[in-house]
Structures are given as structure tokens and as C-alpha cells.
Length: 248
Length: 248
Image 1 (cartoon, rainbow over the protein chains, first blue to last red):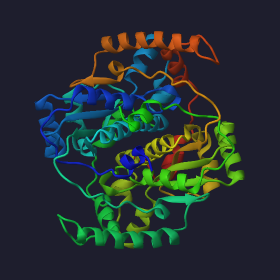
Image 2 (cartoon, one colour; image 1 turned 180 degrees about the vertical axis):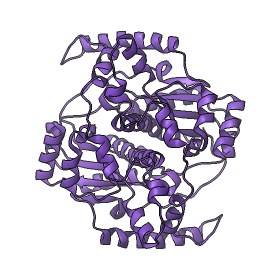
Image 3 (cartoon, rainbow over the protein chains, first blue to last red; image 1 turned 60 degrees about the horizontal axis):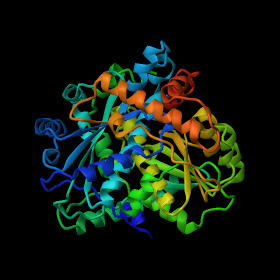
Image 4 (cartoon, each protein chain N blue to C red; image 1 turned 90 degrees about the vertical axis):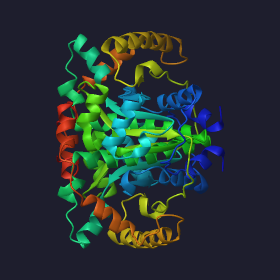
């Protein structure tokens, strides 16, 4: 076991931060780590916007319905981004949009590039004792996020990352065990998966009943089916397409 | 600077491996790191398939046109996966498919979950001195990958990760500098982006001319526009939709 493995295995999302800005050298280390990750075909089809403006943080907190976006040490918005590629393609009069940029494949590629950068940023932050939480709920109102940061076509916000000095202790939340997510040489049978999920439901019931705060009676399968049965965000698909991503 | 930051900043993709299998304890550490990452709404909408079967590795190498998939220490296929959620939703007769699973939003969520896991796996491996390379080119023939691993609906392969003890030295490839990918409080102007990319093109020209092997005359903008102007993979979009992902 080395320090990096310890950092990775001890991950927990932090949602309460001291109201102290991160130091410039910490932000730089986090950004450099984000920039250093792998990228598909050297495309680097992502960008980041660091948010320090209190009014913009306030609006993001309201969009996401997460108050800790207002009070943290730093906030980074991660974007799928072919805008820089489009600038050059237009200059050289090459059609890259209908060829690839607007396809499902290249939407996946940009999403993957941005997420590799974000996870490197997260690991870098945590190695420095800085807490982090992904904010997927910016997707609750993409149009407002879009206007707030003046995003051009070929740029889609994916999620935010709230960073800061932790102001809470959090348990490590149990994750699906190895046998439920890692298979060998072939996809697992339904029987194997059902049996693994039954065991995990027991783990989760015990976890929710034994934790310090927010004790409750719950199972993983019940919780996620409820989430996935929720009202659908009908604005997300057209928003992505209007940005000229994922139009088939 | 700590060991984790050093690991992140010294990342380079390794494409030549010793023909020695990773030890079980190394594979377990890599899988545990992958499982420990953040996940949207606790969905854990991903799976991994470890590939050791020589015939399956040979076929993956052929699909991807990358011979080092045949000779490495381990190979992991990363999947966007709502199959386990669907098993339970069907049992409970809840419609989660049309509500969310097949939407653009939940395709993004599963892709992000899988990529967070994969990047944790990559960082864990590199912290142990193990080299890694993402293999996006499995997408060249998704139907063959699908048949090879007997993937059900609601499961889409995203990329592979080739792992192993390095059998080559690689330079660190220059990445877009901070000012080209990280903006503050608002999206950058085209003028700022153009100026940053011009500088980066000079960096890249120098890099390609000064490196040990494969010296050539090239610029980043030329290279990526060429890549994006390539023949489009027309089978990818329908494949993803047939798996009941991303159908709007």
C-alpha cells in the first residue's frame, strides 16, 4: 500500500467546507494534474472554468440546489469542448462537424476526456487534504449555466467540482463489491448479479442503520430504482443537441 | 509536491509491455481503487471485465488494430451499465427505461461513472509502477466486442485499459497549457484561445522535432483537424441505441 492507493481508497465526497479560498499553488497543482491525464487521439476535447465570483457561485448553488457551492474553497466547472477545434476547422474550411464532432462517438470522447481531467483534479486535491464533491445537479438548468458562463456552440457543461478544506468528517460510503462490478472474460449471468446485489443490499441496510447521522432503513436497489423512476429532465437532450453535440 | 501529485504529473501512456501477468494483489488494488471513486446519485452505472483469455485478447487486438492488447500484464474493458438496475426495475415493474435510462442524460452519467473508475484504476496502476494505456479503438467494431463478451441490453463498452510492466521508456507528451484549457469565471474569447493555440503549436513542433524516435514536422491544430475530418464511424450511433442508450 502506497500513499496514492491510500488516497484513492479513502475517498469520500465532502459537502461542508471552510470558507477559506484554496491557495494559488494548490489550484495550480490541481489544474496541472487535470491537464496531465490521458486524452483520446490527443484531442483534449474539454475545458475547465474556475469560479470565484460570489454571484456566479450563488447562482450555481441555486441551480443545483446545493448550498455548499456557495461556500467552499474553489469551484471548477468541467466542459465537453470542441470549440477550439471548430475555430481552426472553420479557418481551414474543413468540415469536422458533420464528419465527427456532432456524432454520438465524439460526444462520448469529449465526456471521457473531461472526466479523466476531473478525476485527476479530485485525486490531486484529496492528496493535499482538500475535500471534493462532484456536482452533477448543474444539469437541472443547463440554459442558466450556459448564460452564466457565456458558452458558445460545441461546448456542453458536464458537472462541477466543489473543492475546499473539509469542515466535516464523513464515513466512507460502501461501494458495490468487486464481484458485482468486475467480471472475468465474459459478462456475468443475471443469477450471479442478483446474488451479489442481495448481499450488497444487506451491507447497505447495516450501513444506514449504524452510521452516525441520518440513520434510516434503506436498500441500494430500492434507492436507485426510485431515483431512476424519477421525473425525467426533458430539457437536457435538446440542450445538448442545440450545442451541436450528439445529434446522431 | 507529494507522491500522488508526482504520479499524476508524470503520466505517459505505455504501449509496450513485458509479457508477465500482473500479480493478483496488484489487480485487486487496481479494482478496489476503481470501485472507490465518486458515482452520480450512488448509481454505480458501470462494470469492468478483466480479460486474460488469450483468444479474446487476440480478437480485441485485431478489432482495435493495436498489437499490444495481445501482449500485456492485464486488460480491463470498461462498460456503461444499467443492466443490474434494469433487473430490479423489471422485478418491481417500475419503468426506469423510458423515464431515464435511455436518455442522453443517463448515457452521460454512466459514461462519467465508468471513466471515474477507469481513471482511478490508471492512477492506482501507475502508483505501483505499472504502465497503462486507454484503448478507445475498441469502438472500431462494437458488434464484435459485444459478441465476444456476450453483453446484454443496457450495457455499452466504452474503452479498454491495457496494463502491464513497461517495456519502453516514453517521454511525457506536452498537453495544452493552463491558459488554453482553464478559464476564470467566464468562457475565454476566441482571440485568447487562438493566441494560446498558436503558442502550443510552436511547442508541439519543437517537441516532434526534438524527440528520440518518430521525429516529424507537425502542429497540434493540423493533427487534430485531420483526425476530426476522418471518415466517421457510422455504426457507433445505432449500436448505442440498439443497446437502449441515448435514444433521446
